[in-house]
Length: 182
Image (cartoon, rainbow, N blue to C red; front, side, top):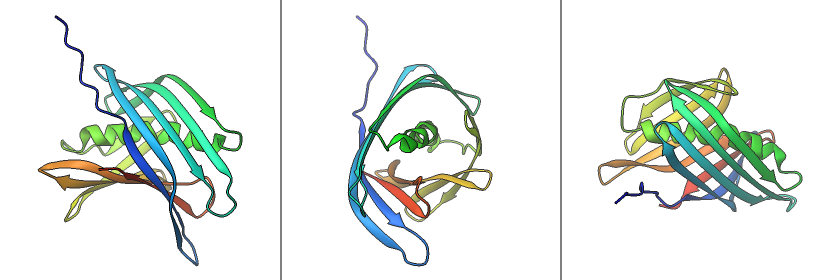
């Protein structure tokens, strides 16, 4: 008898937008996203990310799906295969998702262990700064001076769980928050 490896359900997120600058303004629940991550072999992950959102100011619709297989070894992410589908006008989000989702999965898989401080990715090296807070752990990812993302984990029942992550939107001064459905 062969046992199949356990596969957790895809993680589901609500997308919020926050405009930063002289006047900050939040737009809650402008969309939704899912991330499905399956380890297909030791160190190899199949990642599928789907997202759809409505622009809070002009009602443009964005939708993109990224499907990729990556190898993670020695703090290096290598893309083995990748495809993407996007609604016209959404292409800029696909590239960003392609970059952030492998980083998210590496951070999630290492959050309980020794901190990873750097990660080589196809888009260039990423530094990871980990900070313990009263409720959990925060990890900030940067590529040089460029903000790539921030990942927030809360302690629940002795384990750290992804609460949300934040990434810059392609539009200037806008941050997208992906809030997990816990």
